[in-house]
Image 1: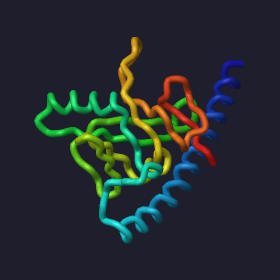
Image 2 (image 1 turned 180 degrees about the vertical axis):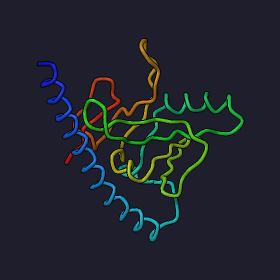
Image 3 (image 1 turned 30 degrees about the vertical axis):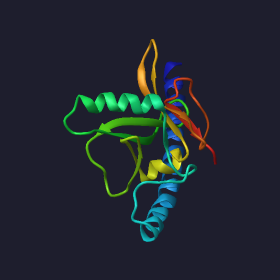
Image 4 (image 1 turned 135 degrees about the vertical axis):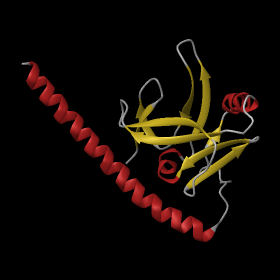
Length: 161
């Protein structure tokens, strides 16, 4: 009995992983053509349009400034999207020192958010916040126009198709 449950679970998870890879590959090919088009039309890395940029909340800016004050080198907040999580895709936040050639940089009040080109399609127009709760303190995506749903911890989401 337990082996049949394991087989069904493995089959289900394999199908979810294949679907997530298919979605990422589709968005990846679309975003690589957008990258070529953007590099031809403009060499600027910062986005000015409200709908095309990723926004930082006041709490996010304050927390990043606190983190930067304890370091000699200013850190960047990197946001990425990976397959996985409860809802299909999950956000990944990291502190980084450098940007890559395919990164988009969004700066607000001296704080820089870096998003790789593939992840950008999943988060454009989103608002990044920092929450300090009883059970955790973390950077979260508070609002994401590209998401149709997600889990209650705000670490994973489903995309609009």
